[in-house]
Image 1 (tube, rainbow, N blue to C red):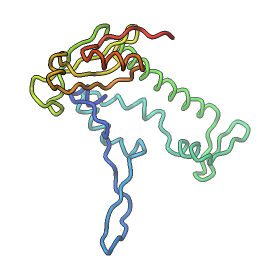
Image 2: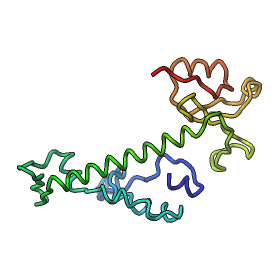
Image 3: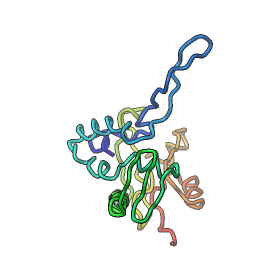
Image 4: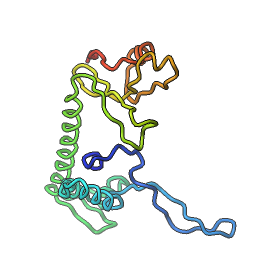
Length: 201
């Protein structure tokens, strides 16, 4: 989201794998890699992206909720609860109920705020809209995409902007969206379809 705010685009592998320790294989050294898992590993790239977007303080809520020792202790069930304290013996750390409650409530608030922002932005699309694609993701300069919309929900995906005649002539129809079986069937029947009816709750 930070890169998009600065004019960039979505990129799945935003954080490249990192090398682990050196190992010897067939007489040669090689560096196996693993995915970046922790906030502090990703922090330098997040800080760079936040600065490029002109919003360096945007990471403050994440910093407020991240506690690696507590995260690891909970993930590995390596903690104990005694009266009003949560203890992490391996780190010789103790948290009061108030400290735990503050961390948990901040994390929930952060998650809820992001969810509300995403939902609101998606609902800002009431009708399908033709949008430009990033130059790195087009096969020709005039290529466009269409924001797919579902009534009552807003944006649900992205698809090609080809006409039915262009698809029949060989243009490759594509879409990236979460569709019901009926919606996917309707899209296959009509590759220009971009507006979908509201779904029953």
